[in-house]
Amino acid sequence: MKILVAVDGSPYTKRMLAYLAAHDEWLGDHHDYTVVHSVMAVPPRAASAVDKAVLTAYYEAEAEKVFKPIRQFFAKQKLNANFVAKIGHAADNIAAVANKGKFDLLVMGSHGHGSLGKLVMGSVTTKVMAHCETPVLLVR
Picture 1 (cartoon, helix red, strand yellow):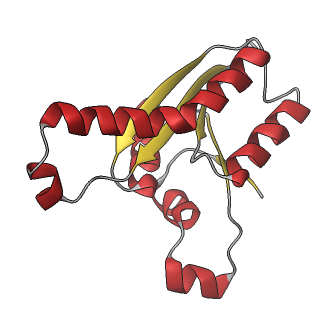
Picture 2 (picture 1 turned 90 degrees about the vertical axis):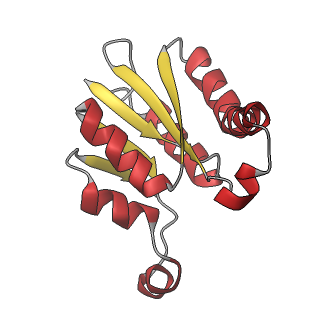
Picture 3 (picture 1 turned 180 degrees about the vertical axis):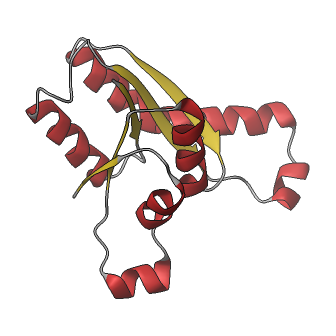
C-alpha cells in the first residue's frame, strides 16, 4: 500500500505517529511511505530581495526541522520513507501530492478545531479532504 504521511512537526504529528506505531496494520515494510511537509513561502517582495541560494537553504532548513524527528521515527521502526518538502499552502500541497502520486491512503493529524474555529481560522484538514481523491485517515 502506498501511504502518504502529512506532517507539520506539531504535537498532532507526534500523536499521529504514535497511532501508526501502535497499529501494526499501518506500519511495516510491506508499505511504501512518503512523508510530505509544506513550508510557507516567503512573501514575493521579501524573496526578491534575498539571494536565491539563501532562500533555497532557508526552505530546506525549515523542512529539515520537521523531518529530522520523523526520520528518526522511521529509522527506529526500521522502515524506509521518501521525504518531500513543498513550498506554499499546506492544504494545496498535500492534496496535490496525494492526487498526483496516486496514494492508497493519506494519514494526517488533525488539530480538531470546532465549527467556530474552522470558520475563523480555516482548516487544512477540511481543505485537504475537499480537494483530495485519496482516502484520508485523520488522527486526533
